[in-house]
Image (tube, rainbow, N blue to C red):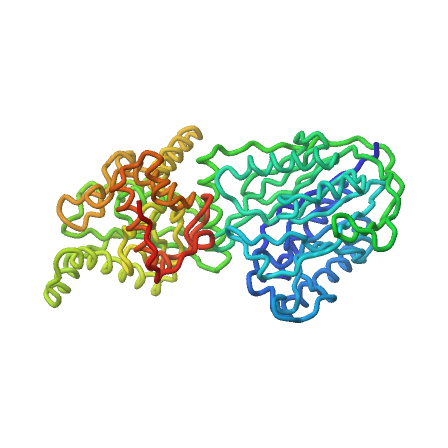
Amino acid sequence: MPQLRLALAQINAVVGDVDGNLELVLQQARDAHAAGAHVLVTPEMVLTGYPIEDLAYRRSFIERSQAAVTSLAERLAQEGLGDLVVIVGHLDRATDVADRLGVPKNAPVNAASVITGGEVVTRYDKHHLPNYGVFDEFRHFVAGDRTQIIQVHGVDIAIAICEDIWQEGPSRAAKSAEAGLLVVLNGSPYEAAKDDERLELCARRAVEGECALAYANLVGGQDELVFDGDSLVVDARGEVVARARQFEPELLIADLDLQAATAQMPEPGTRFEGLLVERTVLSSDPLSAYEPVNGSIAERWDDLGERWQAIVLGLRDYVDKNGFPSVLLGMSGGIDSTLVAALAVDALGADRVFGVSNPSAWSSEHSRSDAADQAERTGLDLRTIAIAPIFDSYQDALHLEGIAEENLQARIRAVIWMGLSNAENHLVLACGNKSELATGYSTIYGDAVGGYAPIKDVPKTIVWELAKWRNAWAESQGETPPIPPNTISKEPSAELRPGQRDSDSLPPYPVLDGILDAYVERDLGSADVVAEGFDPELVEKVITLVDRAEYKRRQYPPGPKVSKRNFGRDRRVPITNRWRESL
C-alpha cells in the first residue's frame, strides 16, 4: 500500500488578521516540510479566522483573502517548499452565482484551496452550511456544488469542510471515488464532551467511506466561541492513529498506509448525488518505501478539566487579541469571583490580574479575609476600597429602601471598577454564573458590568465543582491550591443586607440547575419539566424568572460557550414577549 506522511496544522488564527494568519500557515508549512510531510492540512477559514460573520460580504475582505492564497503559493515555492501539498481554508467568491435577492452579497464561499508547485491547482467549496446553534452560515455563504478528489503520490484524497461530515454524503462520495483518505478542514467550537462525539463521528465516517480520515481543527478563543483543537487521524477501521492536544496549537504528524488510487478519471459533467465530481492528479507514482514515525496520541483532560481549559483559553485570547494589558474584577470572597480570579491568573499570570475588595456595612469579615487569602495564594494584586462612606453620601440624597438600597451598593462598586478600568486600562471581568444570568439574579449596571464574563455559561453547581477540581489539580502538581477552602464551603450570599442568603430568593442550586437544564439547555416546555419530577409551583417560578430576565442577558458581557446551549449565540428569544409557559 502507498505510504503518505500527513501533517495537520492546529492553528490559533485571529479573525481579520489575514497577514498574521498567512505567516502562521507558512511557519506550519516549514515545520511540516522539515518533518518530511507530503500533505499539510489547515483548519477551516484559517487565513481569515473564523467565524467572520458579516465580514463575509465585504468585497475588499474577499479579495484580500484571495490574494493571500496566491501569496501563500508563491512564498511556498520561493522558500523551496513547492513539493509540499497544502490544503488551506479561506474565504473566496463564487463567480457563477447571479447577484439576486436571497444570495449573500458578493457570493462568498467557505473554501479550501489545494496548493503545490507554486500554484493553486483546485478549490473545494463547503457544501453543507449549518444554520443551527451558534452557526449562521446559510446567511453568510453560498454552498459549493463540486466534490474534489486530488491524487498525491498515487493516493486519492477527498476533501470536506466541517459540517460536510456531520451530514450524509462526503464519506459515501469518498467511497464512490475509491479514495484512500478523506481530509476535513474544521472550525468546530468546544462544548462539554464534544470531543467524544467528534471521535465517534470521524470513526463512523471512516468506516462508511472505507478510507482513513484526517480531521484538522482550529484552536483558540473568538468572542463567545472557543476552539479546542483536538485534531485527529483515524484509519479505515475507525481506530485512532494520531490525536493532537486540546486547547493548544500543534502540528500533528501521522504516517499512513493507504489504498492505492484505482478509479478512472470521471467523464466531464459526472455527478455524485447531485454534485459534480472533479479529480486532479498531482502525482501518480507512489513514494519509495520509508521508515514511518509513530503518531502521537495526546492525553485527554477530564470533563471538568476540559471546561477549565476552555474558559482559560477563551479569556486569554479575548484579552490578548483585543489588546488589553490586564484585567480587573471585584473580589467579594464569594465562590464566583474567587473562581474567576483563579481562572484569570491561569489565563494571564498573576501580574496581569487586579482585584478590588469593596466592603460595605454588611460585608462579613470572612469575605474580606477570603479575598486576601486568595491574593496571597495566587500573587494577584488586591486593593481595598470601602464603599460605606460613598453609600452614605448617596443615601443622604436619595433615601432608598429595599431592593433599590441593595442595588445601590452593587452600582457603587461598578462605578469604582469602571473608573479604575478607565484610569489604568484594565478589562473589567463580570463574575456572574449561568444560574444567576438565567434567573436575573444580578444587578444591571452593578455586578453585571464588564467587558467579558468568564463563567456566564457555567451553572452554579458546576462553579463549585470547578473550584474543587482546580484545587485538587494544584495539589496533584505539588502547588498551592488557588481557592481558599472556606470560599467553597460557605453558603453563598450577595451580602447586600443583614443575614442575606441566595436561598432567600432562589431554590437550592441543585434543584434550580436541574430545572434550568431542562428549560434552557434542552428547551422543554413547563409541563415536560414538571414531568421530570420537579415541583409545579417551583417550575412556574423559575421559568417566570428566566423569561423576565431576557433584557438583562442582552446587556451582559460576552463570555465563552462551554455548554450545549449558551445565552447569546445559541439561545435567542425576543425581549418583548408575552408568551408564557403554562401547566
